[in-house]
Image (cartoon, rainbow, N blue to C red; front, side, top):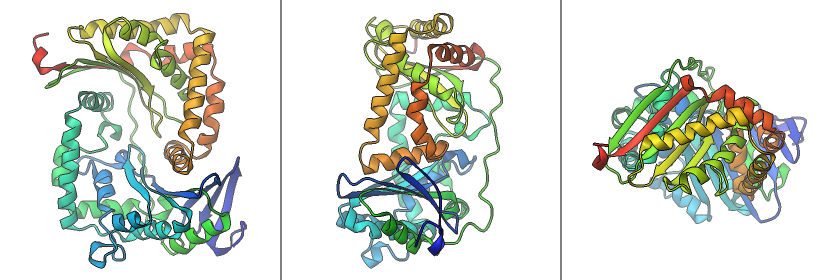
Length: 433
């Protein structure tokens, strides 16, 4: 096999130690050799998440994530080759996750066991057993997960913020799904979903760590190469959220101890150049004890914690600020401070010292998060899900280019009252507040 395309593999790109290949069936392959430790990480990332769901089968991607561990005709409990057991026997660190834009399945293993996980992932890409009995058992597991989430006020406030800010785009739906869909979706509907999206031409295989390129490609071609691409085009998400035409507000009242405030603004997709200054702006607001909102709200005795972040997704998302209030603090007071600080950014901008601290912190955090084979696979996968793998390489350089004028400009562009969604969590014991 060579890079010119024998064995059905074609080299399509290379940059800064990362190589991209394609199989004839459309599978995208990313290789990132790292020889610091005798470990390899393998990930299959599918370009399907809750973004691809609709009413009636919300949560389908997440439920399928669970069911794809139940087995295939080759890997199953009846044969003594249950997926989890096989992976544990070879010392794998393994799991899967679902998010708005993607689902990933991953393993980190000793390098000598690489073929086992490649064979397993190729098998369950098209041969997973989607059975009624498995759906019932996993439905209970997912329902318990859903109920645990409902006991976390910040998680529920965030879920309501997205479902309030987005009314037409499927980011409206939580990744775990609406309860009635999780409870009632039929196995046939899950199987239809699986047979729509789980194909090599809708996936990226990512291999990072201590491996030889020729061997890695040979194993991927051996096990994935025979899989057929999807018989029909993968459905595209064509729904776009229209501009918000006025502030939206909601109150969540349920059992809890501390109040919460969350202020959200519509933000651009990850590909948009304004994503970078908004990321820096989020750090300036709340990342660390010297930041603006921390000093005014946490040091001011109004909250026990504060946070801000911008989503970086395939489609436009949200810029969010939240605070966990101290007992007796009025929600309106904290919201007022948050919004006043955003106005200050619009009018006065930021200092060079603030800007420099934020960029240095982002750079350090990004490189730390990419340390090791599995973390590299995760970072490449997230980049693939929202833009493509070159976003992984360009992210820090684009962050370092952000100027003070960029911060002022995006603050004025995105922090507008008409694109704001405000949520308060009021503990049930404080309903009379």
